[in-house]
Image (tube, rainbow, N blue to C red; front, side, top):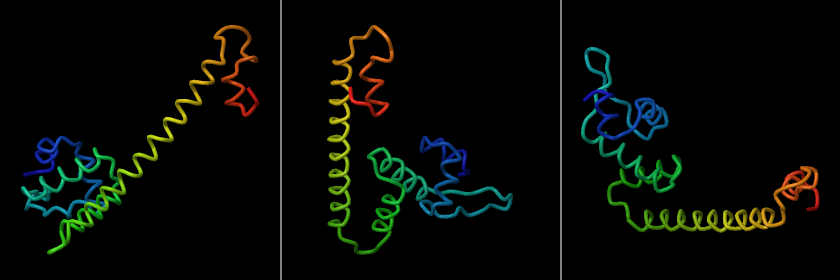
Length: 132
């Protein structure tokens, strides 16, 4: 299959496939006599793996590590589980931080009367580094 067919099968743009090839997440495609890239079902599986891992929040560097584990013969699934657990911990840290940001912004919204001179706005004062 050509690059356009691979893109349609996996639901990604053609440029993404080229980028993943440059990053080493996909092997360099073989070239046909016409010079076009030629892909096979293994590339479909690998590209779908990358796409799903991205959807779960893994970085390209982390995905490369998971792919290396996948490619290793006799690798232990404990490493994959550890990577997933580490990702969960990082996601929880982000969730906690977003909760703190939400709460702080909520306090600023509650302190703002929503009318009057902009110079008296506690939100603008806080964003400017001034005491609200």
